[in-house]
Length: 323
Image (cartoon, one colour):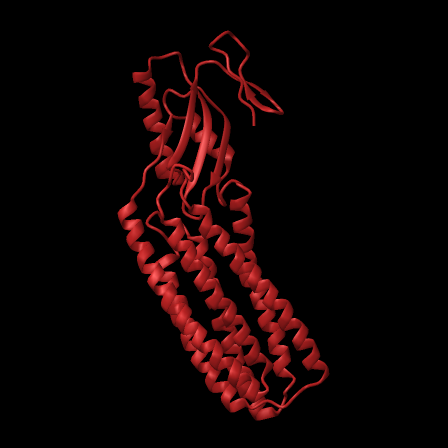
């Protein structure tokens, strides 16, 4: 028995707003990348050039996220029966990996600059960083309000990855502003490459959580904050349920969860067992936001082995089920 529910209208409307914001944000970020890179070269500021690289990654992240949001709202097809939920997760993974690649490049260049410090024109560095701070903060706030939570209160890991990019950039740009002021008043040009190393650290910290979460989804791990044993215990407490076993819970994407389980009940007519199914599906949807639930009803217990769950062969009634 399989149960699932969709609220396509409101979800599609939210997805359309997110896509429009992501597209506008990507265009603004690309313009800032060009500005920061050109001014960074002319001002001999590695921190500002690093910011351009960081923001270029953000531009890529926003573009890939736009693609992910578009694909994950496409309806399911005969060949892709769960739809395109994983497209958004793959986009988030690419975003985070690109961050780590940029981090390596920043560290290599910063180490070289520490060995041979160069003079920095702090005036252009300061004003470009101020523009970047305003832009990154505005985009981060927009992403938080439009895509951080869906109507069930769940985070969208795809939009969240872009949000983390922009938050990290806002902090990094604020540090560039501070460094420009300090260098202007003290002449400590070594702060420029040191700040680049700090930016690299911020990139790693901001991206690690999303990296781990996307891997968990792709590996079909139990969703974060959920314990399979607790779910089984609550299901077993539902009226009419005798036992729950062979339970599996996984994420289809950042906003969709699925579950399958064997449900042991008494030998009763289907019209009666349907009431048990409705009670279980209501529990799963309201308590755990699981709306793709496949429940296999049984009135005889399975033998549990290392290969999975299996019933003893007994004529036509017997079955074997292994994972």
